[in-house]
Length: 231
Length: 114
Image 1 (cartoon, rainbow over the protein chains, first blue to last red):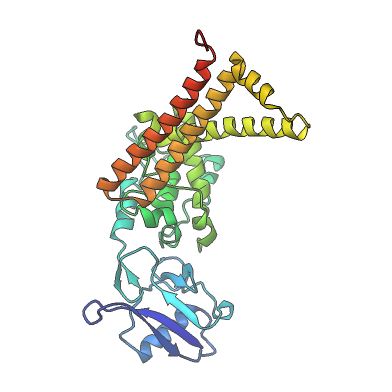
Image 2: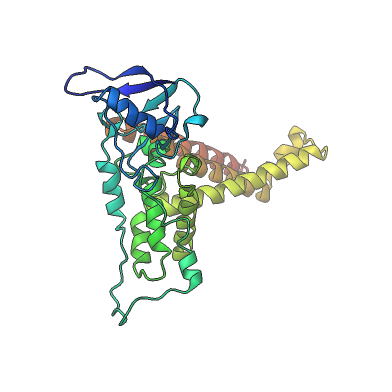
């Protein structure tokens, strides 16, 4: 199998280049990450992130044949050769397939990704009805792999100001939580020409999410919540 | 200018789009129904108070919609403040001039001696 990988070592290279590898998958190699781990034994200078290898940690997000995805969830049988592997587009490259996610997590922290509730806590726990809990489905499953934000043209244009689909999905996860009492403040923070309204409903985020979530739907719900809040 | 930022701009863009769509659909329906107006009929329509109000309303919605749309494009692609601010000002002046010209033309029908 031929794989062409984006290589860049800032300490040695003047600029990035693509390096071709020919490697035969073992019978046990089912996913792209299996093959990358095998490649690493051949060329230990190749750098990429990975951890859980089962689509939970979100570390191995990369651009695979032009489409963002998780190497650990991408079956080798579905890939067209040569397999082109690049780092997440729009993110600064640290080395090879490893990108700098500082800005991405700064946006995540800016939306205050935790429950805010200053009311006296009950003796045991803040209860939710099954309906209230169901509202969090499709939101809480996000693993922050950044596949969506790195595939969003609006995020490429304004990565410093637009929160991006991942951050906005997380923001809506807390806005819609019945136990959170800071929805009004959260919405007021998002009501900004850059933070929320840079979204042009391109929907690349929904198209590419490896967990099957829909950030564009969450963004639409935030806009509707803002409309209700102002009327 | 809070009205041109965030949610209000987004809402205004959609409301003006609906208004423009309404005018376009009504105009297209009129043409499809075979009612191709002559110059005299157009002139009579534009000279009536209802026609003048509708024309100014249409161009008002068009200019406002265009302003929000073009401003969004500038915010996306033009990042240098030295270029962005003059460009936004130029676009704003052009759209205001278009609207002013339409309003003055329509008002001219109702001024004494017109």
